[in-house]
Amino acid sequence: MYTFAEENYIKAIFKIAEREQNSVGTNAISSVMKTSAASVSDMLRKLSDKELIHYEKYKGVTLTTTGSKLATQLIRKHRLWEVFLVDKLKFRWDQVHDIAEELEHINSDELIRRLDVFLGSPKFDPHGDPIPNAQGKFTLRNQVTLTDLQIEQQGVLVGVKEHTTPFLEYLNDLKIGLGTHMKVVKINAFDESFTIIINQSQKHNISKKTAANLQVKVVK
Amino acid sequence: MYTFAEENYIKAIFKIAEREQNSVGTNAISSVMKTSAASVSDMLRKLSDKELIHYEKYKGVTLTTTGSKLATQLIRKHRLWEVFLVDKLKFRWDQVHDIAEELEHINSDELIRRLDVFLGSPKFDPHGDPIPNAQGKFTLRNQVTLTDLQIEQQGVLVGVKEHTTPFLEYLNDLKIGLGTHMKVVKINAFDESFTIIINQSQKHNISKKTAANLQVKVVK
DNA sequence: TATATAATTTAGACAAATCTAAAAATAAAC
DNA sequence: GTTTATTTTTAGATTTGTCTAAATTATATA
Image (cartoon, rainbow over all chains, first blue to last red; front, side, top):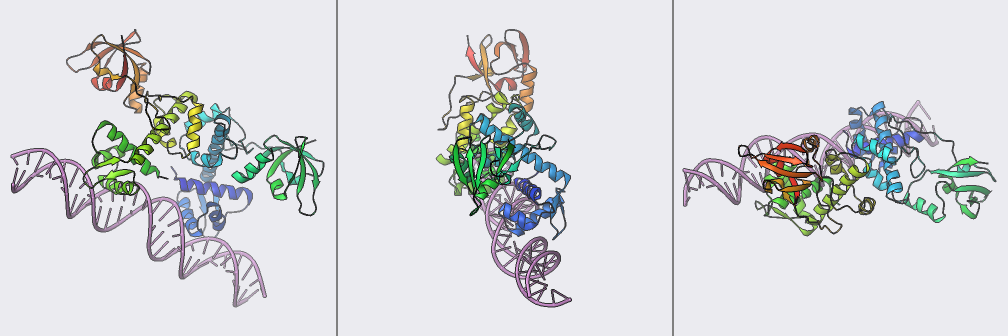
């Protein structure tokens, strides 16, 4: 079995590799893990010894098949626990990340199998992120970020890229949540901010940065 | 906050102190924790520095108020999670101890508060052990071990002292569980074993050791 | 009570995960 | 294509939790 630290490194590597296509560098990991580059170097040697990553000094790393499976199973556990916390324990979506971060390290395949059944085998978590199945396969979905929409185009919020409490609380304040209908009515040349109408009623002005973190399914 | 190791030591000390009245010795702890006495000595110094235990070298330890609160909260968490695993995820009572042993270290008061509500604020866990409330108070119950019963006396199983899988599986095989009615029909002089009738039908012979691990509420 | 036995602590070591400071390798700039 | 800057690794320490072996203290026995 793996330590919490090892599991967290593998998750970090997976996440970085998801956006940057090529191999993952030490600095990128140290920034995600909030540790020194030296600590990362030490850990990479260990992860390589355990055959979770392919590692060549100074060349960055990629996950092995084993490492990749571990990462998707951790993500599966994290997201299933988030569904439990929101659906069953009635937490808000902005409260669940840190608790799930601990719960994902609980070690029992049977537990996750049963939790999945108990929750009705959900395909997406409370932030709209897909939950990989037991084989590590993610459900794909047609989605774009709000910034991809033109004026007068409309979408339904299906996900958020950023999971931090401040961002989610900001969306709560705006009464924006998964399922919220949004129509772009103006893109402001000066600061590239978006003026949107949510659920055919409330008008809001949101920054480009905010819009870039909203994933929507286009509707006509 | 405390490390897993520290929490496990505090739980061990609490459990030993529960049965032995006086202060708890290093060897007793090392035997429960399956570590060397030397490791225990090291840890006792740390726990004492953190004011979780009263410690005088060579004199054994007792929990401070802080230590005692920590112990009961860990027990509360452990037992609530066991209820979740059995009631909601449909695990058997012999499968839940090890998983709860991990879950009890998850750190969120709000999580436990909500879990308790979700489960309907249960007062006993799947093994019949009382669940301390948020203030650390245990519900008491009139109970004796089966060995305290005389011939022809009857009881209902309300708890088991031993939580190991082999013991609980043995009880499963005998169709003995919480709520099972049992009547002592014979105490065998030779090996002190008990002959009992369960649920007015099946007759079983169980060892004194087994009987001593069954907690019953006397019925007439 | 003196001595043997048991319990406990100390000494010294090790693995895991981290750090800072310094060295080495790679990439960027001129 | 050197030189400079950046990235990465190594060296040497530290903390936590553990170990074995040796020393010390307490308890039991004769």
